[in-house]
Every structure is written in structure tokens, then in C-alpha cells.
Image (cartoon, rainbow, N blue to C red; front, top):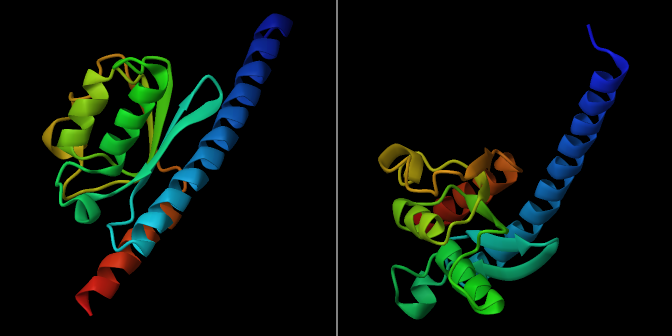
Length: 165
């Protein structure tokens, strides 16, 4: 049985959850815009956003083709830009939003940067970190998956379908 105080807490938590879900979707839309920019540049369409203290401190997309660098993933670019913006290597007050599940390399960098929260859209069953290194993130990190999953997945599928033609 819920008493008055318990009911208020439950209501407040639901409101906070709803606000967080709205914020996650808003940020993922921005990450998707980065992914679309990557696609326009002939890159694999993955985008990333780093949010800290309610503001976006980094935006990035894949640049592996442009830079001829296999490590120039969206997450790596966003982490570097965010660290430069904050003036330090630890992003312990930030959230990373990325359109596709990070790979093992990116998950390791996310862990080393001590990012406490990761939000991604579509899973990557072939190269995603969960299959190969599920403990790569910081031990206290939380992960939210499936935010705008269909849009993120569709962008990747269309890109590779077009590449195969």
C-alpha cells in the first residue's frame, strides 16, 4: 500500500524519468544530425554528442575516411573535443550520446574518460562492445539503449545498402 509520502516520491520519479527520456531523445536527434553529416561526407553515418551540465560541449561524427585513421570514430572525436573543452581528460560529469553501440575501442576510451552515462540508439551485434568487452566501460557507468533505435538502425542500413550497389 502506498502512503502519501511514498506516492509523491513515486510520482516525482516518474516525472523525472519522463523528462530524462525527453532529454535523451532531444540529444539523440542532435547525434543523428551528426550522423547525417558523416553520411554526406561519405563516412559511415555515426554521430555522437557529449552533454555536460545541461549543455552540449562536443559534437562529432565518423571521420575515418576523411582522416585516413581507423581510430577516428565519432565517439573518439567527441571524447577528444569534450576533454579539450573541459581542460581535462576525465569526463566524469558528462553523458555521451551516440547513434550506434560503441565498439570495443570506443568503449575502452569511454571507460578511461570515466564517462558515467552512455546513451545509444541501435545495437551493433557484429562489432559492439557488449559482445566482446562488456566490462570496458567505467564500473559505475550506466547505459541507456534503444533511444530512437529505429531511426539510427535505418540510417545505417540505408548507408550500407547504397554501398553494396
